[in-house]
Image (cartoon, rainbow, N blue to C red; front, side):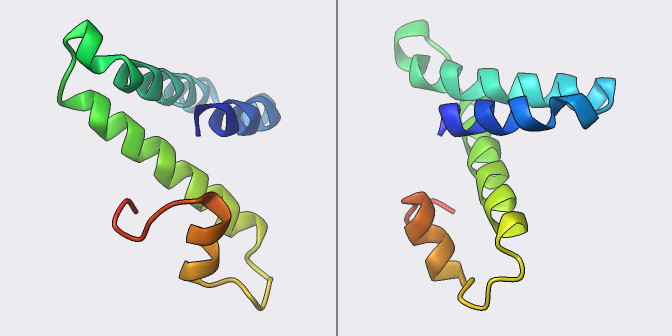
Length: 87
């Protein structure tokens, strides 16, 4: 998920405002922090950052497939390998 977020950020960063680019970079750091949260003693916002990154991935996927007649909640979840409960 982190790699997908960074790849998308790489494609979009040129068109982002300074504040948008900053927020996108910060949201990339969140999943990394969450991955090591137990070892680093982190809690709270790390989980929220992972959720924000997942929602961003879902949003980008839906935007890319918006005109696909087969687009559905189930197709999004299957394509991104997310469970319904996680989203």
